[in-house]
Image (cartoon, rainbow, N blue to C red; front, side, top):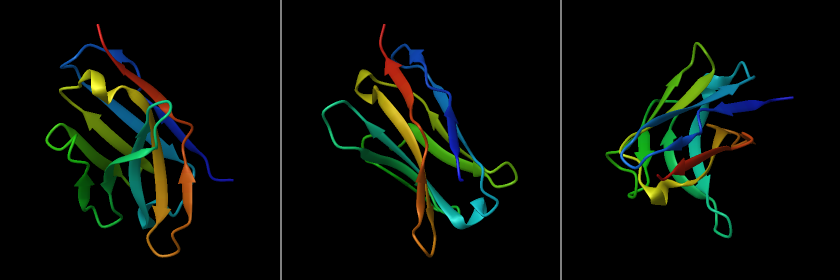
Length: 117
């Protein structure tokens, strides 16, 4: 059974930084696109960042220039570096893996990011 274990969520002041990690228990990790979503209670889950299996990246307009997605295929791990955090970034952040061909996907359990005083 594939598991995605997220970590790194925390309470941080506006302007601060956090780095989220997502470790996957799957040997085919290099063939998966690594995505980061976030969700605020009562709202739809939003795609925030993607780093593809080919290392292309894409970001939501609201986080461009502040968030950076990366991956280490030797560690089966995806990362989301978040800088200049704002209160509106407060959400539960989920990692997601989607296979580049079959589109099979897996989800992490979510990690809470809270930006405030």
